[in-house]
Length: 280
Image (cartoon, rainbow, N blue to C red):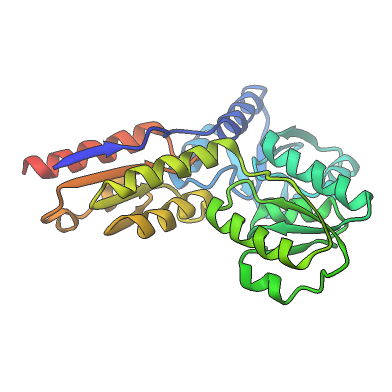
């Protein structure tokens, strides 16, 4: 059985940066909190908790003074609230997410009706909405465009950094067929784009794909969706222990890909386990 790993694995730039900021905050002493998990990976979060990072659901829950803003970003009113409560902020917002926030704000100020392509409940989207006074339109499928009243309107478009490329293009085509003036910013993260491209390449030549990463991770779920489309079999796991021997019966080629918040070591461990199954 041939086992191959996608060319791009391990933490993306934004996740790596957020973790480095968190570790720096811990070294400086005192309690350190994040609003929600820093990244969408259970194993990494457990390790950070051991080092002293605590998770809170709201700023009111935080007793200490240090708060790390996670890679997904937050609305602008969060900064104001933290300042009032005299909290010290460590901003781990991914620079690519910052770009989406700034472009959405610019479009809004210029009078465009802002459409954000992405998942409404995703923390990144909630943060971006805050920069346009929560007046944006969030859509995630071409069907939703058909219900929009955008004819003769000036439309500005940004996209969630981890959104699927193929779906993004389909939605854009629908918007262009209806709108009078459209300004589009393809704000998909370069790492996400490359990771998805390499996963497609691997899935096309594999009988079975294993996607490693958090079940809450948007970018990991995209890799799983892609794998299901191009490979005969696909499984999404968070930990190597979830692998089942029976998955590989009769399989000749296995591909492995990992989300942007999945450590490289975990992906390599998955490869090792699968190779050991093949050896019996």
